[in-house]
Image 1 (tube, one colour):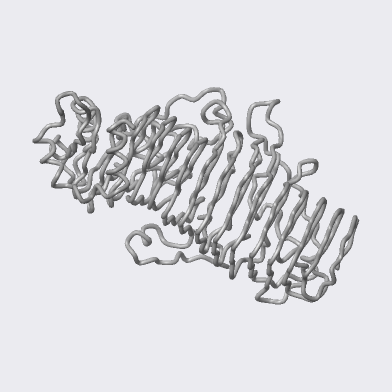
Image 2: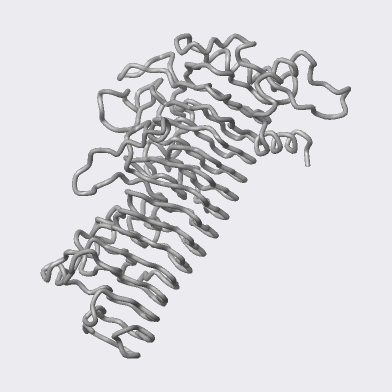
Length: 529
């Protein structure tokens, strides 16, 4: 392994904090060359090269100069931000350089007028003819506080803070600048077509449109971040130990857009040991006060882990484990733009006060180049060891479309407690298909099931699953419609009868369930039992 790469991994992953910040000045005085025999780690203090860190002086030029000196003099190194507030516009990462944010160090996104500025953040770069297939946020990287493109061996780490105070969120709000105006930034960190990336230990407050947008990245590791993370068209990704409070959008979100001008699969992704929520006031998770937002009827923010919505290239080999969802939407798998989504596992998850614990959707929005963009596939999904309590009235959902079922879903050792309270009118609902609609658990309105609404599916298997309701509910636990192959083993359900509604279902089997005799049905056109 290249010596810089080895040293970089050691410093980023094994506690470079022990060497900083005092080592920075010492290393600079000692020099960085070793007689041409290889690279020695070098530290470059941004204050040494002109940054003030007073929160008032614009430090952009000094920061970029420090990064350039590291590359020119040493072939790379660690750019150190000692305690202070570093006001900045766009910071330009370079290969073989990592940023270290010391305890008490903040990189602060500078303000711009609502109408933009000529000397603010870098302008959004031109996109190709594929621009209509994604929104503005996904299409551009340069209009960010920290960005890099086509780089290798880069990182941001340390216990400091990235504060996107001056960034736009992409909403039409006068308190923040117009996201499409020149000189306006709208992302805290944006990376495109990079490899060997480590983001570790720092926090993000008010990260703009995205806290982190990583597109076309190979070998990405994210550890202990705090804001929305979008992982788009990336391979070999490790996200772990993250606390994400994201009331207005998704928390951790693998995607597979057409933003690179071609379809690229997001694959080999692990998300583990993370906490996601949409419940808390902005900044209160960082300062430790954990102030709940004032919401009505338990309508907490989005805040979830989701694969999609942008789904052109595909999703393969993804595992989500040992995660906590609290006061947010539940877990979502969405392929609506032609992606093949397969080999997904979700295990060891707890949820509390969520909306629709699980949402699996294969749709036909088909936002992509025509005519080759056609409905994709969603198959081979395993869900196990999950507990959800206090969930809203919406059940979990598995919903394909006509001619394109969701296939091979296995669910085991799951406890789902729902609010309940549905009446007979709700139980009789026949939700519209909405094949082309934007995918959200609420897209169908109220649903005629307490536990699982399953439509257009093939080979669904559940074992050791309990459905409970806080209030009495007139709906069945399961609504199955246009399903080919369904096995239910050892179910514990809210009532002793009428818990399975079957409409156009074939190869159905229930066995080992309390209060239900073992039964096998070759076909059921319409039946409740």
